[in-house]
Length: 137
Image (cartoon, rainbow, N blue to C red; front, side, top):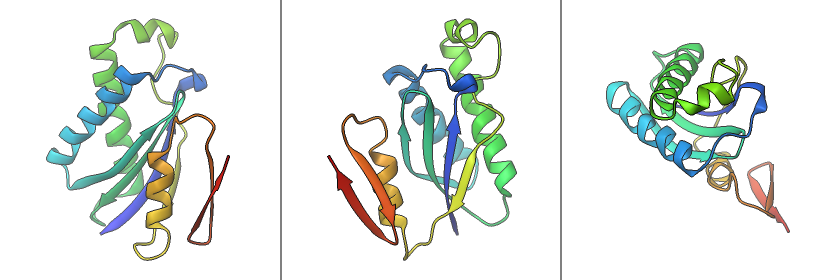
């Protein structure tokens, strides 16, 4: 099993992720997990990007995982919220780029999990450094 930390920014870094979009993304990811050999350990959203902590079997490439998650979530978001297509200037929901890193099961999984959970929370900033988590207020 492999554990990945993905970050997907919205197209043009538009601030469009609200509670409803966050719920749509999480619900769709549950469906993705049922169809594919994936487990979403944690999903944390901010106003213009989403963090995913995803566990997968090694048969899927990173590109395949990213493409699957981005395409299915975007399709469902635009289906359930057609007004967003206009807000995104008729473009894609996600930007073409993304961030990915592997997460060690014994090294920094706890720190990354906590970091992803804290996305979108005001006035709290977390710094991850060598398996330690420091809170700055």
